[in-house]
Image (tube, rainbow, N blue to C red; front, side, top):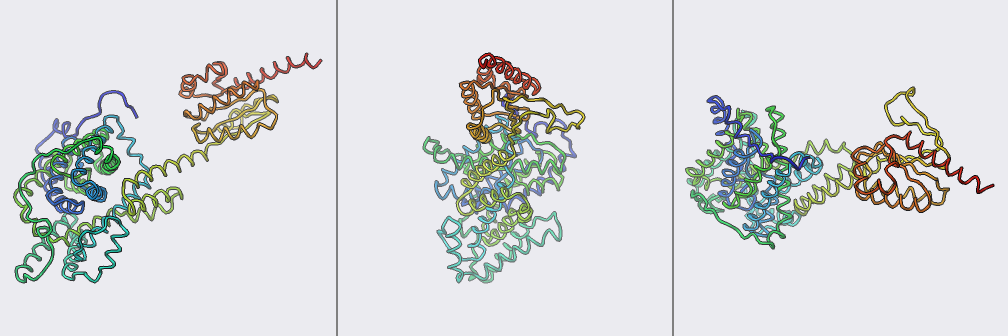
Length: 575
């Protein structure tokens, strides 16, 4: 990770235009049209499920999709609203309203841009996998729970926001299930599931919406008593007017209140977009500029709130649809946004007739695909610490919210990782004889055995010397207080890749207490970066530069000499 140097912002669209051709344009046009058609029902469904209107879902897909393709760092990435944001967006709207969502999305965009400017594109991909699996499965279950009302036609309003209470209300109102609505939902589900078996190129969700909407419309024409709720019934007539740009209050109170939610949106958006980009790179053989991708995602999230939009990120399913239909440059993503814009302008009134039960079926399939149950089953063979992180993240996502889940999940993962590192970091004690090559791959013929005089204690730290290990080392040194103290303590650090401030502090205390007791401290096998840290912290001055040895043989030779000198000085006193 490098924070210096020029800004890493090289949008793929700009480089793609240098060698663009008519053949590439034809492929991108076909792919863009197909992706636009596939994105239509998802944008509408995600908008409604997030607590906003279908119009907002489409506007987000149009503006966000265009900006991700125009300024992103992946050639085939398709941006827009995704299922992963439904839970967090719905929660923000419920607590802070639409203006609160705008502020949180705007701040998340700024955070993403800063991540890209500070070149954190590579680092963000190292979010522990169990956390990603846990919150993704939790989001899937939460999305499913939000669709039960429309899928069963219960007609409930003012549902509780929390998972447990919501299901309590569902179970207590099962007698309100509407059979025609259930039939519509199940028929939609069947079309979505069976379409890929006929042709993988047909968009099952769109096909279900067209067929079921037409069927419900005809049913209402011939039998007006049929009461199947449509988008028009729920939201009123959809306007085809482009939304006006509007501002929002960005005060310190709002920033402090919404910063945790903004951070969650930014981290979630970064993870999802870079995972999508990684999958795309594996298929196309291209290479994503991760920092540019974060900046592009950030720019999209900065702009969409001014049009009332919801958070934007890379969408894996739409990106893969783009690839399989021949898209290879960001032009396909731009075409996809234009297709959605044309649908918005000319076909928006038809959206009013789409049954809510049909959209519920679309989101049920989305939640199933997100759940990753096969991955969860596979992770059950992983270490218990990974399973614990996944389970805790999953439960917190479902029971509380995604912000808490990511924060606690990351904290738990870090703590368990540090514990694992601490357990694997050994502190060895040597006396009398020391095999210089012990712990290396050298054969026995290359081993050199050093004689260590009585009065010399050798302690080796095998692993990172950070706060957990520093405490462990300090405790081990304290246990020797009652024993005969050595004249020289050699601390062998050949396998210490880094040292932190806590370890430096403990080392300084050890050196000072040893010096008060007349004990010399010698450091051995110090790597260049660790030596630089020690010198900068004043350890070199404290023990003397000559007491920081590059090799154990020099350290043992110095220690033995100090012991002999001490014995020689003590001999006349005994006479």
